[in-house]
Every structure is written in C-alpha cells, then in structure tokens.
Amino acid sequence: MRVEERERSGPVGALLRPGLALLIGVAGLLAIRLDAAQQPTRAENPQATATAEPGMKTGAEDTLAVITQSRSTNTRGYQVVIRNDGSATVEISGASFAGRAEPPRSQQFPAGTIDVKTLRRLLEEVGDVSKIPTGGCAKSVSFGTRTEITHAGKTSGDLQCIRRQSAEGDQASMQADEALGAFVRTTLGQLRINDRRFVRSP
Image (cartoon, rainbow, N blue to C red):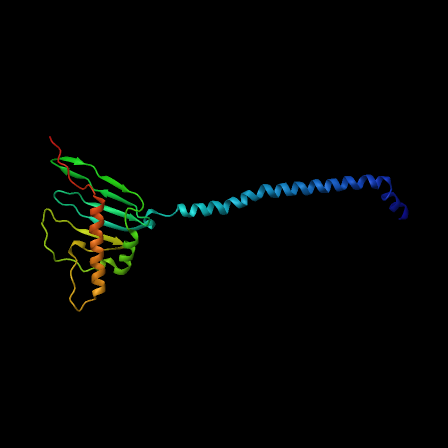
C-alpha cells in the first residue's frame, strides 16, 4: 500500500492531477453554457403570455357608452361609440332616394373630444339607464327621431321624452335623468354629425 501511495504522489500523479482538474473545469463550463442557453427560452414564455393578455381585450371593454339616434325623413340614423379616453366613432347608416343608394359612412373624433368625466359621473348617478322614465311627448311622424343611450348592458328609452315625476318622487333621480339627457343633446350638437340625406341630381 505504501508503494502505491508513493507512486500516486510521485511524478506521474503530479502530471495526472492538473489534467483531471482541467477536465472538471471544462465540464463545469459546458454545463453553465447549456444552462444559460436554456434560460432565455424559459424567460420568454411568461413575457409572451403577459403581452398576449392585453391584446385579447375587445373594443367593447373600452366603450363607456353608445348613443343611438334614429333616422327620419331628412336624416340618417347613427350611433356614437364613446370610449373611456373621450374619443368617439360615429357610424352613420346608409340611405337611398329614388332608387339610388348612399353607402354608410363614419366620423372619427380624437381622445378628449367627449367630456367623459362628466358623463361617467352622470351615468353613476342615474344607475340603470333603462329605468329612466320616458315617453308621452308629441313628435312628427316623418321628422321625429329617438335618442337613446346604452351603458353597462342597459339601454334607455327616448331621452328626448324624459317624463317629469310628481313632487313626491325622487327629485335627485329626476335631476340626474334630466342632466344626462341634456348632456347627450349638448354632446351631439357639439360633434356636428353630418347625418343629412343628400338628394342627388338625376
């Protein structure tokens, strides 16, 4: 045993030990490089999921309210989609006259056009817009229109015909309903939506 120990610790052993250490070092370096090459793949998956989730949001989620205006003899019907940043898209229906069709058209309004802070407050005060008392006002059969608002999956009656409640009714609710109707009228007037039906010369 003592002879073998002397041989290991002799010149041959001295030559083997650096080689063995070099092999161990190279193996460790390869393991580190392999692990580093795999880490970007593991890191990319959570990031891809995080960026994909916002992209799955639909336009409806960014919509605060939709105002619908019906058509009349001289005007086209349209919808105003109001988004949370105050921007709006107006989709105007098509029209026809004397067998000639005019295609639908749209108007775009940038962020900040609509006072969404006030609109959001009024909608919160009103609550369920479908419960706004409406009806009972006289209108022209040909030129009369309806103005409705949709919010949180509920649609109001005609905001042009909000009924005043009796003195015993909830005055705060009545004031909120009328304030919302006035806001809608003012907003449509400010947008100056081109809803006219154009008569083309033959």
